[in-house]
Length: 274
Image (cartoon, rainbow, N blue to C red; front, side, top):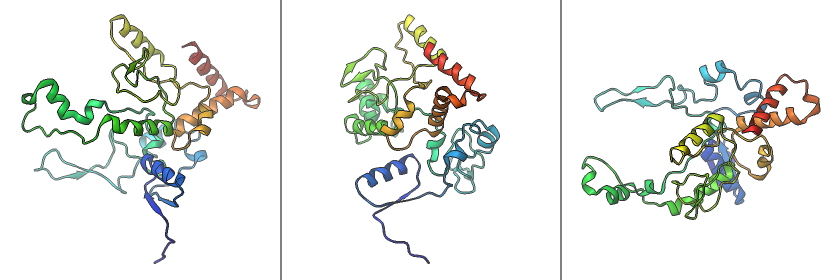
């Protein structure tokens, strides 16, 4: 048996959690070794802009997903049934390889509401203790929004999350989500332009007196590549490569003949018109 040299920390699994932890510990001066069961993800091979739309490779064969023969989940609907292993993934798609599920996620991050950390207390105060059935296992988390908010903020800095805060230190701001918990600061990046349908829904909602808030569904083309140099840590590789490729097509003279250039121009102009 080969005995490897000692190190300060060994991180098992290099998805979102493992990668961030490894990076934080390395920044503190510790020697860190990361162990990943799945394959190494090569940018040129796995995230090439010409192959990311390969539905056979990614949708049908689930190239970025965990192989069920590596590790699977057993499911049963009640204790009397025999738990059987899942052989195909449904909406549950655990990632595989360096980057984990961070390689194929939807690029959306949410915070829990302050009430969710003290759910039993919140519901008791609002509806009374009799409204909670005895058989319902419900309890507070043992932590609070105030304790967790700085950690939410730090993750959003690392991930480069974009948006427009509707509540900063209790001050409500028009254009953001007025129902979210109080943030200590705005998002690290400005909100991207909304998709056309989302913008239409928001405008329609306001006409009926509803607080409609649009999510950042269409990434802005300008400045995305610059944020990479300002914010280290895991990023949504497919989105970043797509944006970098668009910038390359739009700004580089030698790429004007590329067949994707026309599509890039249309996307840029469409974003400007929103």
